[in-house]
Image (cartoon, rainbow over all chains, first blue to last red):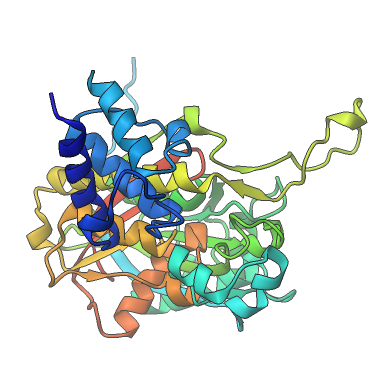
Length: 81
Length: 336
């Protein structure tokens, strides 16, 4: 079972790969749109990459609720639990 | 019982000629942004679109198709009277009947060629190429004209933030016919009607007698749910592209050119990454100048690559087109 920090680190790598944002900036309290400048289409790419990486499902309807990195990490943790 | 004659195994089939029509008026983002409270930069980063073309009153679905078709016929070295069938892929011929195809065939001088329109939205051109190839193989026709044409500016709401900057006008045509070496791979195609509402005409055309006047909700212009469409197009269509290469017995290393439907530059980029296209493969990016012309986008993008010297006649090109329905189709072709 991955820890919160392990999930955050993997997600940070994905955000870095998709949107070119330094992985160190991808912290739990950061908003994807407002702080990290990840636009809605990049967010879709992040979600699809996260689904593959963590073997979870993140439906379109859920994506809009994932405002911060912490929201996404918590959602993935719940799916893995 | 007397057996009906079965079709004999048909000839090798290829795209023999290509022609396009780009409307005269170039429309920069600056002309679009005020009505949607947006900016040139926002449109460029979300879609890659810098300009698009809108057809004028004298540039109709029929006239643009006829112009593109004449070039395609000339390049193929085929006279219009040699055509056995005219297939027109479009969603913006605004008459339910008669078809645009019959009018186009008549104006080209192809009568009495069979003629019909095909409703497969942005995938329509690739649907048409597949049908045409099968017709020639099966002996139903020797030469088929396949046209992708749209005048989406007629059915786009200039105040709709999700579509007004995307959709545009134009036409492209190919002649499909017999040749020495087969140049059209088996199609991989399909549909997913569960997602019928992701890209849609919002309301039906007004009917003359409507027993319930309240039933007419919304306008007849196009609407799109951008993010789910982006997800489907970028990732699920990359899988269809891979299946198409497998069915053709090819790998990405064998390709010279990748021509996806010009839906959005971000979709093209995401698909190219998912397919791991090697650097030698030229990627169609006609959307930057042309916008999303639905059924016309693949032949328009094909022509641009050849005109710019990025692709040549005989190159192996992976075509994939996808859109409202949802529907999709893909095949590998040798460029005409």
